[in-house]
Length: 309
Ligand code: UD2
Ligand code: MN
Image (cartoon, rainbow, N blue to C red):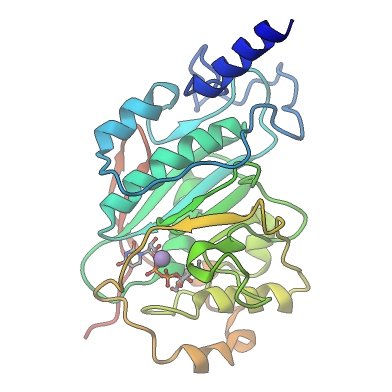
């Protein structure tokens, strides 16, 4: 009946959490329900192209009201109707970007839920005002998230990047995956073939095979290309979604203080091969200052031991 069809299609459009699974809240400390059937390869409730808008001011409480009811403390979620294919830790490097984080959480949680992931969000906050070290924060996120749960896939995401299509799955694949292939800031094209910045997904095995990120890129730039080189030196390729699925919007921003371009980055990129076995997850050293559990994320404040000056 066409009329009925129309009405149900309309309902679909308007229900905000149509796809998220409303029933029992899973307890993340229990092992994922072994009795459940595996989730389908293609999540059934994806919407495709998304409308993303950063102009409105969003408070954390707005976001909690919007997505909170389906989450477990620490920004944890797992589908209730099927067994998720992967256990994904989403790692966000952070310092002093609260408004960006609010937008990111507002858009990402519903997407990750519709993608039927068993996931947790870890915001790794660099303490103090030393030089920023994005890559080291990623390594710390890998380490800290694994202390909590047996994650097998790690998505590393800038706080200012929101996908414009939920078919871009936050999962790992046979090769390390670069998800942010078409960013508005770069006019929706891939700036160069080996780029591996923005949003990436590596399995635990892929990440360990390259010894993680370098810990020694202080300030802006280079750390993403260093990881890209590590992958290639270990015989891996970069996998990507197509440029329609891989569209992103980046929140507009200037350069943060204490994150000036790293003057050594070009030189350091000539030394990746020499350093990668000794500079990485196996040489990681830091101090956790605080771990705070919000409904929307686990906020880990760390001293990254930035060089003086
Ligand atoms: C590009 C890359 C990014 C990274 C960076 C160089 C893309 C799409 N993005 O982004 O992945 O390689 O160059 O380091 O390729 N941050 C804070 N507070 C700070 C500074 C940085 O939270 O004070 C975090 C935040 O998550 C931010 C990320 O670090 O999104 C990268 O910094 P950026 O946004 O300033 O760098 P950008 O946009 O040039
Ligand atoms: Mn940015």
